[in-house]
Length: 178
Image 1 (tube, one colour):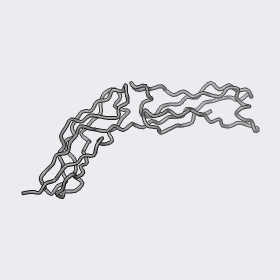
Image 2 (cartoon, rainbow, N blue to C red; image 1 turned 60 degrees about the vertical axis):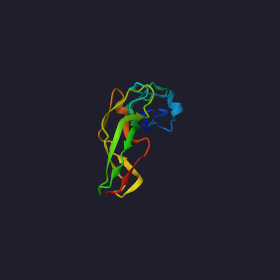
Image 3 (tube, rainbow, N blue to C red; image 1 turned 135 degrees about the vertical axis):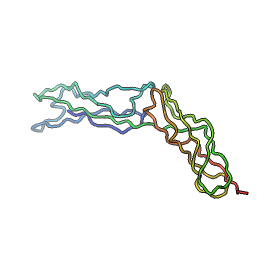
Image 4 (cartoon, one colour; image 1 turned 90 degrees about the vertical axis):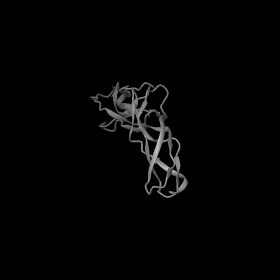
């Protein structure tokens, strides 16, 4: 009796129903004939502050089946894979600049996180002071991609999340050089 592998699901999402697969039945026996009680499956119950199974791999353990035809029952664990949830950064502003023939952008502001599940403890540290203009030409409302590699997540539940980008697209102007 093997616990079926599940996932991946995203952290904080609905946990799938746990199931098993029974193999090696003989002589046309059916599951209903072989077992008077089907196996149940339990996870390892490693949970976050918000009460969700944490990001990563969790062991699914089958047990409790009752044989009624003389089979020697054995169990094989399965796994549930949970991927990290995305967090977005807000609080950053792209600064206007004078044309300098580069794509370099300057960002200001204090980064804050959005998307943390209620009850989880996550902080952000570091800086996000640079970015990249979509092109180097003079113009208004030009798209800027923030460089977020200088930011790090911390605290008890940080391992369940990853920074995915900014909450609102950043824009700034490039004005002509004098």
